[in-house]
Image 1 (tube, rainbow, N blue to C red):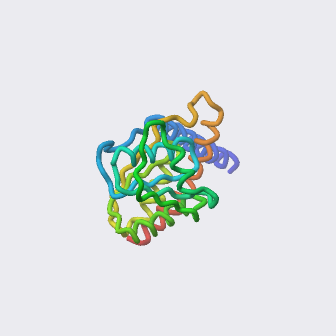
Image 2 (cartoon, rainbow, N blue to C red):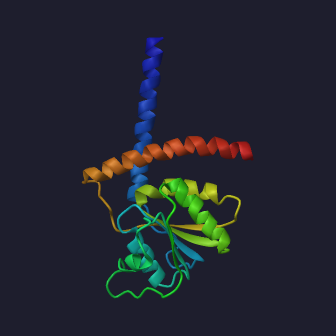
Image 3 (cartoon, one colour):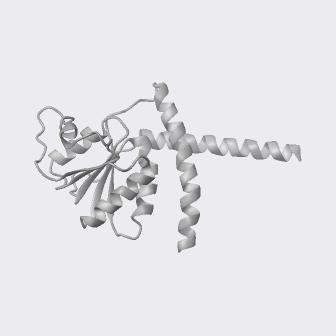
Length: 194
Protein backbone atom coordinates (compact mmCIF):
# COMPACT_ATOMS: atom_id res chain seq x y z
CA UNK A 1 0.00 0.00 0.00
CA UNK A 2 2.87 2.36 0.88
CA UNK A 3 4.58 1.60 -2.42
CA UNK A 4 1.40 2.40 -4.35
CA UNK A 5 1.11 5.70 -2.50
CA UNK A 6 4.68 6.74 -3.32
CA UNK A 7 4.32 5.62 -6.95
CA UNK A 8 1.21 7.79 -7.18
CA UNK A 9 3.06 10.75 -5.67
CA UNK A 10 5.96 10.23 -8.07
CA UNK A 11 3.65 10.03 -11.10
CA UNK A 12 1.83 13.17 -9.96
CA UNK A 13 5.09 15.11 -9.49
CA UNK A 14 6.46 13.95 -12.85
CA UNK A 15 3.21 14.91 -14.59
CA UNK A 16 3.26 18.32 -12.88
CA UNK A 17 6.92 18.87 -13.85
CA UNK A 18 6.35 17.89 -17.50
CA UNK A 19 3.32 20.19 -17.61
CA UNK A 20 5.35 23.03 -16.13
CA UNK A 21 8.08 22.52 -18.74
CA UNK A 22 5.45 22.75 -21.51
CA UNK A 23 4.00 25.87 -19.89
CA UNK A 24 7.40 27.61 -19.74
CA UNK A 25 8.00 26.72 -23.40
CA UNK A 26 4.56 28.14 -24.26
CA UNK A 27 5.36 31.39 -22.40
CA UNK A 28 8.73 31.79 -24.15
CA UNK A 29 7.33 31.28 -27.64
CA UNK A 30 4.16 33.39 -27.61
CA UNK A 31 3.71 35.80 -30.52
CA UNK A 32 0.86 38.22 -31.25
CA UNK A 33 -1.84 36.85 -33.56
CA UNK A 34 -3.00 38.64 -36.75
CA UNK A 35 -0.88 41.70 -36.03
CA UNK A 36 -2.48 43.88 -38.72
CA UNK A 37 -6.09 42.83 -38.18
CA UNK A 38 -8.39 45.51 -36.80
CA UNK A 39 -10.83 44.77 -33.99
CA UNK A 40 -13.72 46.63 -32.39
CA UNK A 41 -11.68 47.10 -29.21
CA UNK A 42 -8.26 46.59 -27.67
CA UNK A 43 -8.48 45.15 -24.15
CA UNK A 44 -5.50 45.60 -21.83
CA UNK A 45 -5.22 43.77 -18.51
CA UNK A 46 -3.16 45.65 -15.94
CA UNK A 47 -0.65 43.97 -13.68
CA UNK A 48 2.49 43.46 -15.75
CA UNK A 49 5.21 45.57 -17.30
CA UNK A 50 4.65 47.05 -20.77
CA UNK A 51 0.98 46.01 -21.05
CA UNK A 52 -0.48 49.52 -21.04
CA UNK A 53 2.32 50.87 -23.23
CA UNK A 54 1.65 48.07 -25.75
CA UNK A 55 -2.11 48.78 -25.72
CA UNK A 56 -1.52 52.49 -26.31
CA UNK A 57 0.87 51.71 -29.16
CA UNK A 58 -1.68 49.42 -30.85
CA UNK A 59 -4.37 52.08 -30.34
CA UNK A 60 -2.05 54.70 -31.85
CA UNK A 61 -1.54 52.42 -34.90
CA UNK A 62 -5.29 52.51 -35.54
CA UNK A 63 -5.87 48.82 -34.91
CA UNK A 64 -9.08 49.65 -33.05
CA UNK A 65 -11.36 52.64 -32.46
CA UNK A 66 -11.65 51.82 -28.73
CA UNK A 67 -9.27 50.96 -25.90
CA UNK A 68 -10.51 49.41 -22.65
CA UNK A 69 -8.06 48.95 -19.77
CA UNK A 70 -9.29 46.60 -17.07
CA UNK A 71 -8.12 46.51 -13.46
CA UNK A 72 -6.95 50.12 -13.20
CA UNK A 73 -6.35 51.44 -9.67
CA UNK A 74 -9.10 53.81 -8.56
CA UNK A 75 -6.67 56.74 -8.23
CA UNK A 76 -5.36 56.42 -11.81
CA UNK A 77 -6.85 58.80 -14.42
CA UNK A 78 -6.95 58.78 -18.20
CA UNK A 79 -4.21 61.45 -18.22
CA UNK A 80 -2.00 59.14 -16.13
CA UNK A 81 -2.54 56.39 -18.70
CA UNK A 82 -1.84 58.61 -21.71
CA UNK A 83 1.41 59.75 -20.04
CA UNK A 84 2.66 56.15 -20.42
CA UNK A 85 2.73 56.36 -24.23
CA UNK A 86 6.00 56.05 -26.07
CA UNK A 87 7.80 59.16 -27.30
CA UNK A 88 6.50 60.29 -30.68
CA UNK A 89 3.14 58.53 -30.37
CA UNK A 90 -0.10 60.45 -30.64
CA UNK A 91 -2.93 58.88 -28.70
CA UNK A 92 -6.41 59.50 -30.19
CA UNK A 93 -8.53 62.05 -28.30
CA UNK A 94 -11.46 59.68 -27.96
CA UNK A 95 -12.48 56.37 -26.66
CA UNK A 96 -10.17 55.25 -23.88
CA UNK A 97 -12.17 53.64 -21.07
CA UNK A 98 -10.75 52.64 -17.71
CA UNK A 99 -12.23 49.78 -15.70
CA UNK A 100 -11.64 50.32 -11.99
CA UNK A 101 -13.46 47.38 -10.39
CA UNK A 102 -11.36 44.31 -11.29
CA UNK A 103 -8.59 43.01 -9.01
CA UNK A 104 -8.20 39.47 -10.40
CA UNK A 105 -8.15 37.88 -13.86
CA UNK A 106 -11.60 36.42 -13.23
CA UNK A 107 -12.85 39.93 -12.38
CA UNK A 108 -11.05 41.34 -15.47
CA UNK A 109 -13.11 39.01 -17.63
CA UNK A 110 -16.38 39.91 -15.88
CA UNK A 111 -15.68 43.66 -15.95
CA UNK A 112 -14.68 43.53 -19.62
CA UNK A 113 -17.74 41.47 -20.57
CA UNK A 114 -20.05 44.14 -19.14
CA UNK A 115 -18.29 46.83 -21.16
CA UNK A 116 -18.27 44.66 -24.32
CA UNK A 117 -22.00 43.97 -24.09
CA UNK A 118 -22.94 47.60 -23.38
CA UNK A 119 -20.80 48.79 -26.33
CA UNK A 120 -21.92 46.06 -28.76
CA UNK A 121 -18.34 44.89 -29.33
CA UNK A 122 -17.90 41.84 -31.58
CA UNK A 123 -14.11 41.46 -31.72
CA UNK A 124 -11.29 42.21 -29.30
CA UNK A 125 -7.49 42.17 -29.18
CA UNK A 126 -6.52 40.91 -25.72
CA UNK A 127 -3.23 42.37 -24.46
CA UNK A 128 -1.39 40.86 -21.50
CA UNK A 129 1.98 39.37 -20.54
CA UNK A 130 2.97 36.03 -22.12
CA UNK A 131 2.99 34.24 -18.74
CA UNK A 132 -0.56 35.51 -18.09
CA UNK A 133 -1.98 34.76 -21.54
CA UNK A 134 -3.16 31.17 -21.04
CA UNK A 135 -5.18 31.90 -17.89
CA UNK A 136 -6.55 35.12 -19.39
CA UNK A 137 -7.69 33.15 -22.43
CA UNK A 138 -9.40 30.57 -20.20
CA UNK A 139 -11.23 33.25 -18.21
CA UNK A 140 -12.25 35.37 -21.22
CA UNK A 141 -13.44 32.43 -23.33
CA UNK A 142 -15.49 31.24 -20.37
CA UNK A 143 -16.94 34.70 -19.68
CA UNK A 144 -17.73 35.36 -23.35
CA UNK A 145 -18.76 31.85 -24.43
CA UNK A 146 -22.38 32.86 -25.05
CA UNK A 147 -21.63 36.17 -26.77
CA UNK A 148 -19.95 35.24 -30.09
CA UNK A 149 -16.95 37.53 -29.57
CA UNK A 150 -13.80 37.06 -31.65
CA UNK A 151 -10.67 37.16 -29.47
CA UNK A 152 -7.25 37.91 -30.97
CA UNK A 153 -4.46 37.18 -28.50
CA UNK A 154 -1.68 39.74 -28.19
CA UNK A 155 1.06 38.80 -25.72
CA UNK A 156 3.31 41.74 -24.91
CA UNK A 157 6.51 41.36 -26.92
CA UNK A 158 8.77 43.25 -24.52
CA UNK A 159 9.96 40.85 -21.83
CA UNK A 160 8.95 41.48 -18.22
CA UNK A 161 11.58 39.03 -17.02
CA UNK A 162 13.65 36.46 -18.92
CA UNK A 163 14.61 32.90 -17.96
CA UNK A 164 17.82 34.19 -16.37
CA UNK A 165 15.78 36.23 -13.88
CA UNK A 166 14.57 34.62 -10.65
CA UNK A 167 11.32 36.59 -11.00
CA UNK A 168 10.54 34.73 -14.27
CA UNK A 169 10.50 31.39 -12.44
CA UNK A 170 8.45 32.77 -9.56
CA UNK A 171 5.86 34.21 -11.98
CA UNK A 172 5.63 31.13 -14.21
CA UNK A 173 5.50 28.76 -11.22
CA UNK A 174 2.61 30.71 -9.66
CA UNK A 175 0.81 31.19 -12.98
CA UNK A 176 1.09 27.53 -13.99
CA UNK A 177 -0.55 26.44 -10.73
CA UNK A 178 -3.31 29.04 -11.17
CA UNK A 179 -3.95 27.71 -14.69
CA UNK A 180 -4.23 24.16 -13.36
CA UNK A 181 -6.57 25.24 -10.57
CA UNK A 182 -8.86 27.26 -12.85
CA UNK A 183 -8.87 24.49 -15.49
CA UNK A 184 -10.03 21.97 -12.89
CA UNK A 185 -12.94 24.28 -12.05
CA UNK A 186 -13.88 25.49 -15.55
CA UNK A 187 -13.58 22.31 -17.62
CA UNK A 188 -16.03 20.15 -15.60
CA UNK A 189 -18.39 23.15 -15.36
CA UNK A 190 -18.36 23.58 -19.16
CA UNK A 191 -18.90 19.83 -19.71
CA UNK A 192 -22.01 19.90 -17.49
CA UNK A 193 -23.47 22.76 -19.54
CA UNK A 194 -23.17 20.88 -22.85
